[in-house]
Image (cartoon, rainbow over all chains, first blue to last red):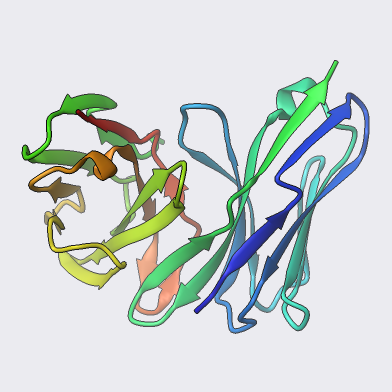
Length: 113
Length: 115
């Protein structure tokens, strides 16, 4: 059974810092991996999608990497801003009879002005 | 292009009642999935609908059901509500063709409180 773990659970950094959020998964037979952002009381906003055959994806100040063999993904945020404060969720995509996401418990990020 | 729309956004029910939540996917998306988010269990997969058929269901009791209409809109129903059903219910849509599934896009969710 796939398990997804995110470390750290919470992170507080001053504005401008570069930071790395970690995600690990137990079964390397994944279809893809998605990173999401969730603001309090809101739905999920998709940040990056990495297919199982890819090593990384970039969007603006965000870069996500995937290492299936070690069961790890990292989300790198450059030059953090207070508006980046949110919970970041990693989700592993599995495809058997259908597609579903297995989520980690998230990293709650606070970027201090 | 409109995103995923969920209604209602908030609702309060009492134990034993039933509830129906609605989801309109992004235009052109034929796959709709439902997830439950609670503080204790996090985000958990409920079920996926594609071409009006339930393709997969997570580890939830039979009180949780759903359906999908020919226009890809989906509803989920929870009967005989329990206190533990209080949660944010999130709907996601994606493009799907055969075994190829694209990125999931989520709605804002329906927050259910059971008293």
